[in-house]
Image: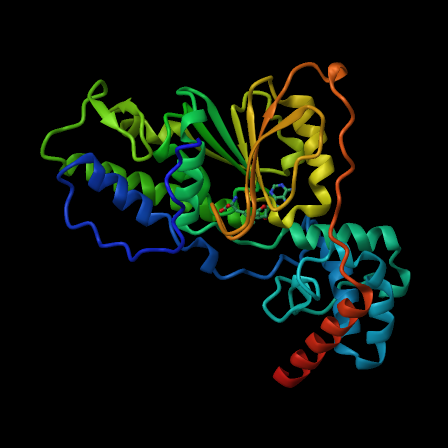
Amino acid sequence: MQNAPAFRTHETAALPVAGFRHPADLFEALFQSIQGGEKHVRPPLELTPGSPFLPFIEIGYALRACVEDKSRRDYLLQRLLPHRGAIIGTLPASLLPHGMLPRAAPLPGFRPLEQISDAELRAWLVEDGGLIYGELQRFELENYFDAIATLIRPGGVMVDLGSGLGKVVMSAALAFPFQRCIGVELMGYRHALAVRRLDALLALARHGLAALPTPLAPDTPLQLPFGGEASGRHLLDLASRIAFIEADLFKVDVRGASLVFMYSTCFGPLMDAIAGKLAREMQEGALVSTTTYPLNHPAFKLLCQFPAGTVAWTSVMLYQRTGALQALSPAEPSVSYEPDPVEWEERVRQQFAALDSNA
Ligand SMILES: C[S@@+](CC[C@H](N)C(=O)[O-])C[C@H]1O[C@@H](n2cnc3c(N)ncnc32)[C@H](O)[C@@H]1O
């Protein structure tokens, strides 16, 4: 890893793939096909009895009512202030015009903010942050793959916790000789989009494989895009090497994972719970990577840390599960970001003003 190449700093325009003369052309076309998921249109959450997001919508409505009624904004500020460290950005994303809260009328029984406890509010803010969607850009993911390439052993299982539209899962399956790459995503519509994108990827792979002038046989040596060699099975078996699961990451066992990836920038307040889960389940030697937030648990040793602006716009950390828990010293408590209250309030009021001027 000391010899990792200089980091890419921006996206270079991808030239359309004109034909499939070599497997490298197919790799490039496949990588190109899975970009841009961050631009997808976010549909409103389903406001139907039985929707798993109903409790989230109820509290979202209570908060949004206070944004929309200027006379209640001071009360809203007072309620949010103690939890400002759990908010990603200034006002929670769901309260902004592009947020995913539906516009339909509240269901009977929805409570106003006065009847919602501080604990419920805090849990809502954590969930709101976790639902924000973003993807690393292609050049950032390439930096990341270069950085971890020497640590990836053939045949392991990669898991992306919070896999969104599946970009990292599909990219990792193309880039490395993992036996399986699995994405776990909470939001049904994102999971469905990932499955659709996988279908398109597999159709393109079938088309490209059929077009190669020299057919790729299962045992033909194949040069992988980030170094290392595999065989033709790497591409021929793509369908069985990628899977997406619609589930809460806390309910999926990652015992068999050799690498757990998390674009954890939106998981700040969840990180301690995630670290505990991974420590209970992961095997000695397995790897975990996080963005922005550390994995503060004595079961994990920091292997390398890439500051913001190197591998990606935000910091990227790589950890390894170490030996028996009993032998380890206690973890450092995690330090979470707590904005200055005065500066925070000023930013929120500016955002109110911006919302009013766009109304
Ligand atoms: C920042 S996005 C990252 C998407 C993808 N990993 C990538 O890097 O392209 C984080 C994803 O985590 C999902 N998420 C949030 N909480 C989750 C949970 N408890 N279980 C599973 N997924 C979750 C969000 O819906 C979102 O799609």
